[in-house]
Image (cartoon, rainbow, N blue to C red; front, side):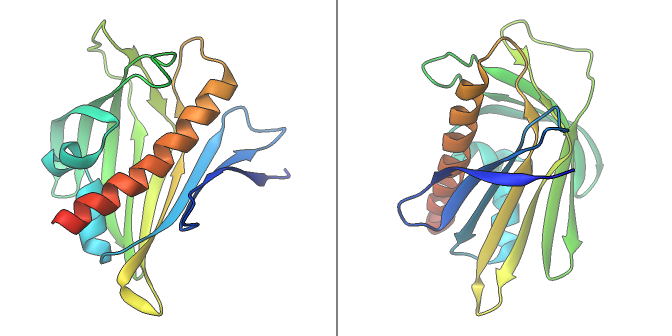
Length: 186
């Protein structure tokens, strides 16, 4: 299977990129986002993991509820997202299993959507295939972190792929900017 990444969007500062993996054999799209964050690994992951802190800075997320806790870094969460592209993509709801764990010199926060019977009629239920955020300190600057995300989201519904690609690229780039601003305030 031949895989390659196509650049979808790069910020002007060149510190954050959003790419899309395409393959003739893959039926779903995988997006990769990568950027340098001016903070330590633990602080970055603390802002990304499920919890009230995430709602304070993530401009796409409109609600987040922890449905079940299994242990300190393991839960089932339900969250909703705002509409995108002038509501061409309507608000979505996701129910994900989330787990955060130490990984080598950094942290890994990963998740996957679950089939959850309770649905809210005002949202389309999206589905996240296995995805994750890897955060490691920069070797030459341990107070800065390299944050890499792999996202395989099925937004579901009748949406042109070009709209999904545009929305995902801009959402991922905005995610990094919003996260950096939140960390600077903390």
